[in-house]
Length: 217
Image (cartoon, rainbow, N blue to C red; front, side):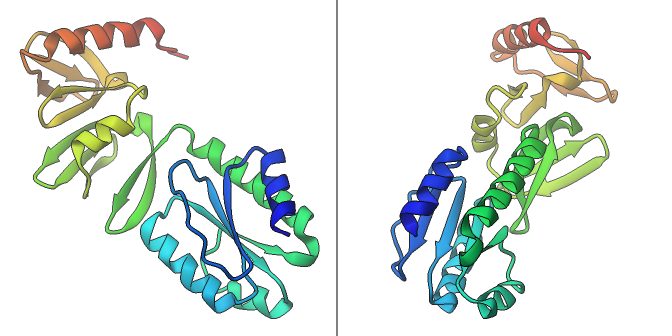
């Protein structure tokens, strides 16, 4: 069965780690899209799923149900999709279609964690990020929320997404910059933020390059 699942995941273009045969296999977390739990012991599968949810909430978890009782028990768990063993190929195809739709809807969304809960925020809703201690003020067009993140890690995650570090504590979405001066940027909501003199040449270059390639439609 593991070989069959692997073939289906490769065919549909998903990088999934398959845990099967009641053996808790080592999972390489980097670049894993989903984890398929194909264990006959459902209680063990559920315990392992809870470990994954606590560790990496963005991973899609698919559970393979061997019996009807497994399906009923799994309905109380937040699995991304439940796959029936007797309808394996059909159900996996449905799960992958669902994953594809989620991928598309999240393509322009940025992942943040607030109080242990995963959030996906459209990038254009973000005006800028402001670090404050071990937290970040996430300034949105609709208001401000606090997230427990590291600004340097966010900057790395947002590379190529139109954000620029203008000062030690500010990471700005260039989509919302109305005007760039040597000492400040004016945002389209009227806010004015300080630009580090040391960072200004880099900010200017990045903003000019961003404007050159921006699709205004």
